[in-house]
Structures are given as C-alpha cells and as structure tokens.
Image (cartoon, rainbow, N blue to C red):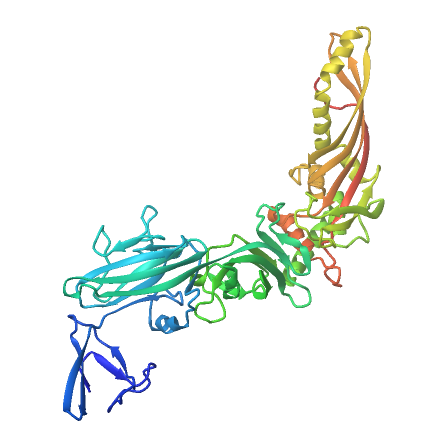
Length: 570
C-alpha cells in the first residue's frame, strides 16, 4: 500500500497509531486528508496484493476539502488554540453558550481549506436569538449580515469573506434562544456535485434579577419603589465578620442552563466577587468592602475560561441592579460624627438635637425630652410610605412590626416651635382663604355685626419644614432637622373676624391646636446628614451590643397656641 502526499493513514480512529505494514481482509484503516485538493480526485491510495492468479494493483482516489467554524469560546476577543481545544467539549444540545448582550459581538472564525471551484454560503437556522455581523462594532444604521432564516452567498449582494484561509464574522446574542450557523460549499465545474457543510450550534442564555434582599432582614430588599433608585440595595456589613450578606433571586433562560450562569459583583469593569448558587433561581453573596463604602453593579455571565470568576467580556447585559455596602468602620465614624453634632446643637436646636440623640441611643440627658414613650404603633414597612429603607426596626417577613411612639405635649419646645412655625401658618392661611366668601357673606347679611366667630377643622395635611439658614433662622432650621416632612394629623382653628370702619374685614384673633406626627428615619439618597444617619439606621441590630444607634421611632407633637397678631390678608 502506498499513498500520495496529502493523506495520512492511521490504525485507529483516535489517530494514536500510524498505520504501517500490511492489512488483512476484513480489517480497517483510517484515512485523514491533511492538505486540500487542487482538483477533483488528486489524492491517491494504491493497494498491492497477491493471490493465486498473481500480483494485482488498484487505486482509490480522494478529494480533500475542509470547512470549520471556531468560536471565541473563552471570550477574550480572538480565536486561538485555546478556543479550538475547547470545541470538543461543547454539548450537542446547547453548543456554544453565549450570554445575551446587545453591546457585545463575539468573534467567530470561518476556516476554509478548499481548492476547488464552487459557491460558498452562510445560513442561520433557528429562532431570532442571534444576529451575525461583518464587523465587530456595527454602526447604528448597519444591517446584519444574517438573521434567523436567512442565507447569504459569498460574492453576491455586497457580501464577501475570505475563502482562501480564514475569515471572521461576529455573533450578537439579542435574546434567549437557540440557532445554528451553517457554512456550506457547493462545487461547480469539475467539482459539480461535491457538497461540504459544517455548522455550529449556538445558545443565547439570559439572566434577570427579580429581587435581592439582605439575608438577615428580608424586608430590606430591592426593588424598593420608595427609593429614588429602586433597584439599589443599601446594606451594612454584619458586626461579627464585617461581611455584607445578601441574596439575589432571578430567572435564567433557558432554565436548564442555570448552573452555567454566574452572578458577579463589579466595581467598574472589575469583578470583585461572585455569588454562590443556593438553589434554582437564587444566589448568595458575601461581600467584604475594600473601602468603608463601596457600590457594586451586578452582572450575570458565563465563566468561559474556567478561572472561577468573571471578566466583563464574559458577561451579559447589565441587570440594572446595584448594591451599596458599608462596613463597621464607617458605621462607627458616622455615629461619632453625629454624636458630636447632636451635642453641639443642644442649645441652638433643642428639638433636632433631642431626636438625633434618641436615634443615637444617647437619651440620658435631652434638651427637650418627650413626655412619654409607647410601643403601640403597628405598621407594615412595605406600605409605610414615609419609611424609605425598610430597616431600623424588627420587621417580620411580611413587613409587619411595631414602632415606638414618642410624645411631646403642650409646653415642650417641640410643641411651641411647631405651633409658631411658618409652615403651620401657611397651612392655616391656605385653609382660611377657602372660607373668605363665607365670612364676607356673613357681614353682608348681618350689617350691624362687628365680629364673627368662626372655626374649622382639617385632617392629614402634609407640611414640609424646609431647609433654611441655620444662622439667620435657627427655629426654622431646628424644625427642619427634627421633622423635615411631617403630617398634621388633626388641626382645629378658632378665629374672630372683625369688620372695621369703611367695611374692611380683618382677623382679630386666632387659636389653634393640633397633632403633628412623623417617623424619624432617613433616606441614604438625600445625602449629607441624612446619608450619615441612614448608615446607622441600616446598621442597627437587635443582636449586637454596640450596633445600638439607628433605631427608628415615631414622633407625636400635641401643639396649641393663641395669637392676637396673626398675619392674614382678607
């Protein structure tokens, strides 16, 4: 037996033993084409054998051609020997698994070893999960080379790829699903009837987050519609090990590939931690912030290179979810800073200082202590609109809990300052304005009347003790840092109108009494003092001997005042 150059003979299909010597009837050898044919049948294998009639020779002819598709399986941007070595590991069911990411085009190599005349085509079979592009960074107005159900022919309609050796196309996974990229050759001329075809199975896998939550407080979760950025989880590390512990729940499509998807925490483009799969659709994270405060984005990806973490190139599109975590050092620093500020504010801002000191669990000596404290306010943190972050108190999984209510009655600084505030005056004057016709009609009907006693009530009015200069308006600033926005649960107003000579009507006296309610909590996203205090609220723990600052509470202020110089323009 002898063969022409371009063929290799093997004793086994695994190519572990080169064939030499002779072969007996019924035995098999394995033939490999190692260089492409330049014409049909240009490779030869000659057989020699002897029987009773003498020596004989016959020849087999071969035409060698090859097409291959190789993907950038490790997502490092090129197709190299490492990628080609991974191809035999691809499953027949899913093939090359690619995360859905419309901002990434995956390099795919078309390898052509054909010396015969013919036509080359690329076709896409399957659903609409993928697009094929001719460039790695297609322009916004560019048309894909291929979508599902299409076929293109090299050299026709502006389509061209190199068939002399290798060419590249670029795969974009746009939604979950499967498809098959098929590379075909159809011989022409002397090669008429020769067909070669290779294909690669593709699966686009997508992962989305439904919600994420703190492990030890499932009520602290995202999305949180009460936040400015609902898909952001704010979390403190645990006091015993300084790890931020949370779980991510989500969905993977196709679901059978959930074990292939890995969620990662990213700082910019660097993955700093990955989640541990707990069960179908849930992953656990244990994050150790490298700085006092860290914000991470969460991405899902495929660990294509097997290094146990994620590179940005291995990831799908951003999930839109993020985590802001801070450690015990940050908790202590903010507690110390707020404690200093609260004690400095005792004299100029007694109401605000009192509430902050109570929030800090430093209630031994308060400038305006409450008259009583009761724990009788049942709430649900999910529906309590004034509570931005569902932390700072113990809540059951369904959101139910009890918040203590601190009461300031008439005679306290809080009651006096609320009653005399510009915000209460604006509220009353707005209500008075709606009754001016009634007052005017009374005097018009009672022409001899000089005064008119009038009263009204109102409920559940929102007041905003807006921020003002702490130097020029200390009382207003005190109420701002104490309450911010609050609700006047009930308001009763009695007033006396007087008709002056010349038919003018004026407000001679006014008395009011009411109840103001508020929840003493903070929003991290409001910045400055609110962000400082929110860190304590997020870090408060019932089971920690030193994480005792940050417990939220309700405030109730019963206020009453009489005025002989109330300013109202009739």
